Image (cartoon, rainbow, N blue to C red):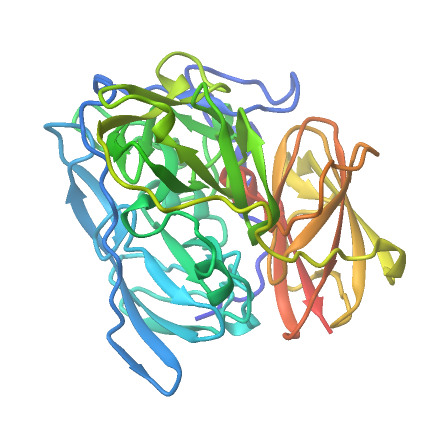
Length: 486
């Protein structure tokens, strides 16, 4: 089901007519920033609940080199805050949805069954995917209908995630629960002595706010796209959830653990730290060329990182907090690890992880500019790319299949930029080249008044795709552009 051509977003009767929230931000006074949405429910005590691990999805069948899965979107009630029931929209009625574990080079087909009362779209974030299965925001699955998405997975092992991608409504759909992890594995990665099995842990991190009865709060406009004026810069929740649980605790052995970190928040940026070293081994597009030891790790919405933490550096009985240095008060905490047992550990982090092909910008056929800014739209204020709101029928670029291109991204305020179809490498940030060898990414954080140059090459599939801001409120309010690979 595809709607007829829509004028950019019905959205913006917004600026003039929307009601400012209590934390109010006048759009006339400056560019809006993300705002905290305060819960009416009491905030739960940190580290009082165990970390849940999402169910691993089982294929309904596997034939001819393809594994078939079903994801049913439906309403459900779950306990997020202790003692309260929270209505969600979930894949399989859970939040997060089940983790799909797939293999590189083996086709994965996912049948999306929509049992919600509104149209949806499924996007595999980080997937190298043909256009008909990429989740173009107007390729809607109507209530009561289904659609099969086919992911060939001709790509490296990596930590991906899947989520709703409906035009104008991605923010509230993801906020209400439509997100889950998708792990691609391959022989190269499995040959490494990295932690595996129970010591390979997916951590989907997000923030939410709750009404007194446990209902999720979200500053929607009541059936219209967008959010109340005060939250146009992005919605920040005051409860940090990991795998759907508030500030949980994970009991671990005094051994190495691989943590697959995914920032699934609508607008919150995390600076993660434990007070000790973390070894980063992977990013959006899979393994790094070599491990990098860091004291803190910054993740913008949509970004992922795989880190190894060696808990043998701590005594049995000690506890280690994963904190958010970009947050204050309760939002400065994420989760806690409790070292509760000794165990033998044969894992290691080797000095070389993978071969990462550097893309040569001198071979670029074209350099394109994409300016991410706020601006006037239909008498209100919206979020624009190159001064224009999203139009699903207007192609902002037409890269040729196989060509290398340089894209120059500029910002007014912070915008995490996500590019569909293929990964890219960061060439420069405000003219400075990043240190170390290149890595593959699909989302990059543009900070305030910043220029980031990336180099990319689109391969295998021709067709329509999008790039957009992954602050989901910005995305819903027009900060998206279509491009066509020709």
